[in-house]
Image (cartoon, rainbow, N blue to C red; front, side):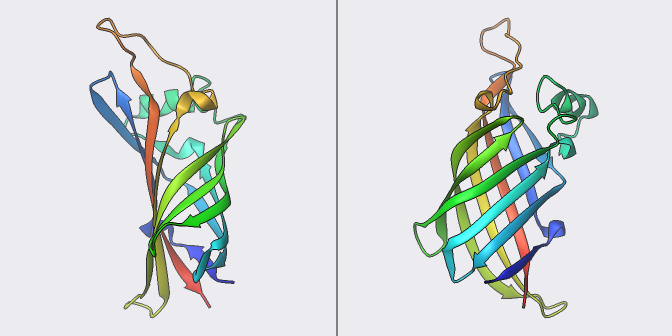
Length: 176
């Protein structure tokens, strides 16, 4: 078993969604944790759990963030966390994996498959620790999770797209 401690300073959870059918709004979640149970030499036999504090959403606009925390979207007072719990990890190449798991937003859990890239390990020249990293990306349909608020546009289409794309970069300190 490999013990990993998330380095939050060098990790992030970002997302983007279509806005007004013509551009993309971007944001991030600033408070999250990743638990890894397994072996870096056998990632397919490992388990991962990601917990995201929904109220830590940051789009760079306080009014929009407030709306996203409200009952129209995440309803963060009632559903404070989003989670992803892996069920299987499938190796595609030496660096590329598919991670399938249960993604829960609000009171809905759906099985989703994400792409993960294992970036190997390295020695930190500042303190001699061993670090490792993963890049994860995927997309979900927000309406599958009861995030259905929208507004029709006069020119056709809607204000907020259905598909949410996200990219995550996770760096860990390998605890020996």
